[in-house]
Image 1 (cartoon, one colour):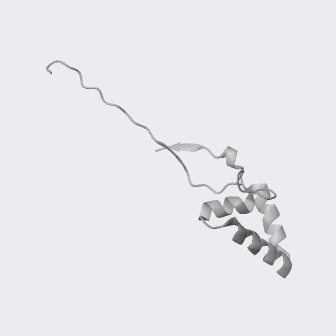
Image 2 (cartoon, one colour):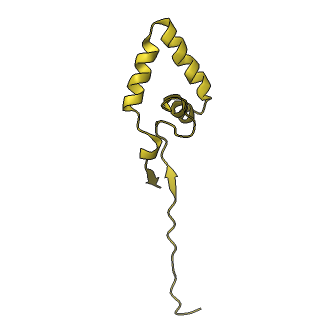
Amino acid sequence: MEGAEETKEERTSYTMKRTLAKSKSNKMIFGVCGGIGEYFGIDPTLIRLAFVLLAFLNGIGIVIYIILVVIMPSESGVEMGKE
């Protein structure tokens, strides 16, 4: 086909950037443990048990959890990145 113009399709894929955020789907109280579990690909129950153990050992688990509740963004605030 002479004289036909070539058209190029520009495809753009959007992917979720891997960010640490509070989970909306897997939460018990604030979604911190669910978000950590989703980020690292492990069961959030193990994260919850670790926080409980730290809370009983010296109380630092409660402090860390409260800090994470304040500083971790919620899942809805995470943006999609252009790849």
